[in-house]
Image: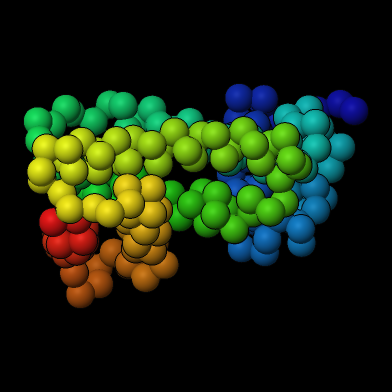
Length: 194
C-alpha cells in the first residue's frame, strides 16, 4: 500500500508508537485495534504495517524501549561511595524517571499479561536486571553493616513497588514539590532498611 501523502517514516513511526502508547494506557491493549491507532495517527490502517508487523510487536517494542531507556539512564547516574548514598540516588532516580513516563510505566506493569511467552521472558529478563541493580546495593549495604535487611530480594521488590506507586497519585503543582516527594520517599526507604 502506498504511503499517505505527506507522511514520512521518521515522523510517522514515532507517531505510531506515541499513539499506541497513549491508547494502550487509556483503554488497555486488548481493547485497542490497529484501526484505532491508524485513525489517531491519521494514516490508513494498512499503512501501520510499514512501521510494525502487528499489534503484539508494537506492544513489545514499547515495553522493551521503556526498559532499555531505564537501564541506560541508570548506568548514566553519577557513582556514589556508600551503599546509603547509592540507595538514595536509586530512590530519587526511580521516582524522577518514572514520573516523566506515566503511560510507559502503566503499560509496563499492566500489560505484561498480554505479551507472548517469548516476549514476556525478554521483558522479565530486563526487569530482573533493573531489580538486580537495587538488590546489589542492598546486599552491599548489609555486608558493610549499613543496612539491616532480612531478605534482599523481597526488600527490592517492596521498594520498587512503593516508589512506582508515586505515579498513581503525584501531580505537578500539588501540595508537595517533586524534590519534597523524593525526600519523603527517601526517608521511608532509609527507615525500611536501617
